[in-house]
Image 1: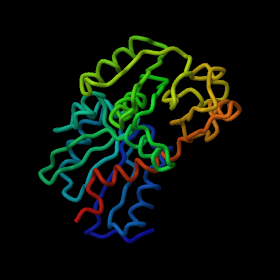
Image 2 (image 1 turned 90 degrees about the vertical axis):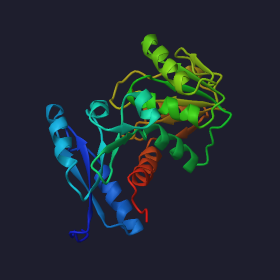
Image 3 (image 1 turned 90 degrees about the horizontal axis):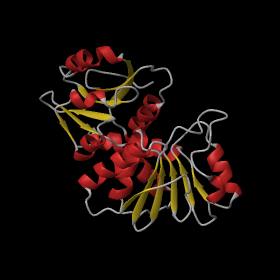
Image 4 (image 1 turned 30 degrees about the vertical axis):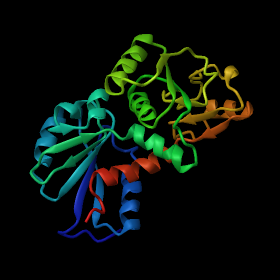
Length: 266
């Protein structure tokens, strides 16, 4: 382990539970790779203690910022001082930068991480038609990011149609020129197909869409990282589709988080 000194910049990840998080390992590897004197540590914080914890952390002058995960992504929005337009429209954030005066600035990088992950494997989104399964937490961020990346159209399919309509309205509020449709379980007719639900994490989960309608010309993408080979990706490969695993999303989020937190900045 690297030597931690009085000059080391501190960062934390807020979660409850905390035992499962992989971000500290990945971020500290990133710090070491670029030669940055910083350390990210896990901070186990319960929901009812989040406000008081953030109030105290503001006063740590060597704190660079915080990464936020379940169940705190929504609650931090009322506890920060500033937030990006996308974070406000999504209503959630996963990274907080501590400014020199102690203010906390929030941003949401789930969607940007997904898009950069696609680009890292040679998949460009501009001008493509996209199908998004889900309208919950991750899907919200990915929906905004797909439109921001220049997709020609976005179809949102969710079991609860009202949630899909709500996501559509919020995206259009920020990107009024976007072409957005409400879809069905049928993903056919789209070039990029994204599962942004949690379906596939557990054995026996129902499939997030009608896989019999997948076409060999489609790119089928997952946000789930464990298991790596979800039932959806297995079905997609059987139908000749190109697939994108969930892991590149995390790798690219690490880079984006570091950039937002000012890591490596002179």
